[in-house]
Amino acid sequence: QIRSEFSREEIVIGNQPVSYSAPYELTSGRDFGKNYLWSISSEYRMTGNVQFSLQYSGRTTARNNVVHTGRMEVKAFF
Image 1 (cartoon, rainbow, N blue to C red):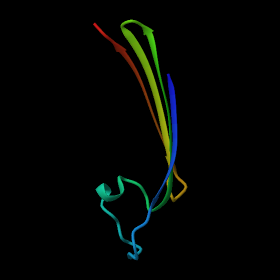
Image 2: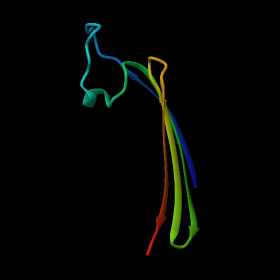
Image 3: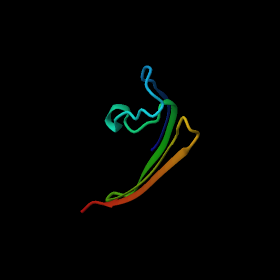
Image 4: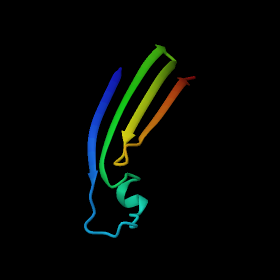
């Protein structure tokens, strides 16, 4: 099973001073301006009791920084 997702978010708050810093909860940690997010995930059942999953997500910020996050997991069911 493979899934992928791509989205664009824009954070805009009215006329604020240049040094204004919005609370983390208000913007979900995103920078002001356009943010692009993408993710790819995969799951594979190796046997009846073992499952392997792999996830990758990335995002760009208005400052043109790219943040990459990855996760790999193997589960064994008893």
